[in-house]
Length: 434
Image 1 (cartoon, rainbow, N blue to C red):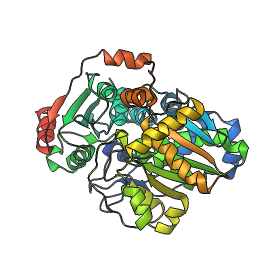
Image 2: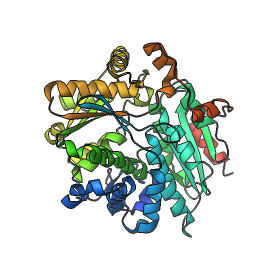
Image 3: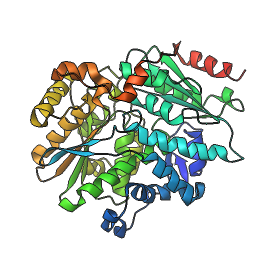
């Protein structure tokens, strides 16, 4: 499989090169030259396969010969060492819990898969030491820190917006030490993301630092998020009803991966982009005009993204055909007040505790099911409620038990370096190699 830049000014590269580079030299996102179709027999016999076997069949065409099949199978199996429970809320609505990994967020899947791919690439004689530069609006930082912690030959530098991640999220990305460094940016997530993108095209790093990204702009992070859509379909297929996924969306890598799965043949009928008031994509789906705005802070902070990087990939999947996209994807936006009401409603209906992001997904699903009651609806619960304990406990008037892995992190000392702008980031990176 070859990958090309969506800015169309860089040469095609292999899976290995795309993962290691992160972003193309022309600052474009890498995109697969083709979206492979899986045979109908795969879906007909999916019940006979375990999770790792399903995920391997989904990702193998994108990896090609960059990783030997036996090693790729081990990478996939090691990535998926936790479950993705599907929890019923009502007769036709379920929560897909993606927070049972080590950092209790859906991004554990992509971070673990990418870390293992890079570790393999780094073991090759041609590989050089890599510095991973990543921006986070919440959970990405913790997942990347955990996934790459103490991996030989890889340094990780995480940029996060000061005061705009939860206390637990901050602890998860600032307490590792060793090869993990956290930079606290006086700004919002979009500022962090812009700095990362600028660094990738800065010629002063050439021959000094090999940079790559572990955000969902990296194809290994992005594409591996297909895994849980395939795995969840296996659980629902026997019901023989159309399936709709509602995805809480910020940078849109997760939803984009689901759409790739659909184009590969996965029988998902529809997707919902559920956002908070940072609603660039829902507005686009209403008007046909893409008009990104500066992000504003909300209680669902991981979705506080004004200009989602991966939406260009979504548009490319449908060859920029607005009508084709609208047939398979709807968009809805919700306020913090509506999000809190949804958290209460879910709790009253089923005693289920959702985090603010899952509640936004639930709201989007309800909007869709009002007009399509024949569908089976799944909303993604992307992070454990404990990561947003203050808002969850205050809204539901409960006290959350603290999982052991969170207890151990909260006792650790925060270590971060404050920066103001790209000049600070550049000075920091060059100082490390001087």
